Length: 70
Image 1 (spheres, rainbow, N blue to C red):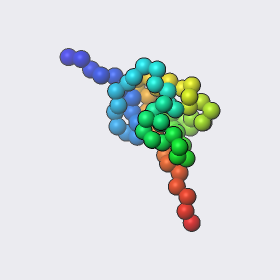
Image 2: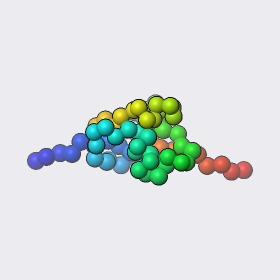
Image 3: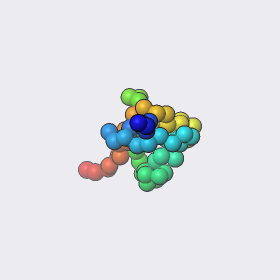
């Protein structure tokens, strides 16, 4: 039996793709133009590191969108 190694995005398992960066994942999901905060394995991942941070099997990523209001 073959198991697919996955990473977690907002609590849902996704198949791992070698070389996929956090920035590429955000673009694929349509979040690249929105104000978001990224939690990467329990730590805030600052925007300058999104393009150079590869997603590894087992990683846990939470994307929180920022909504303005008053």
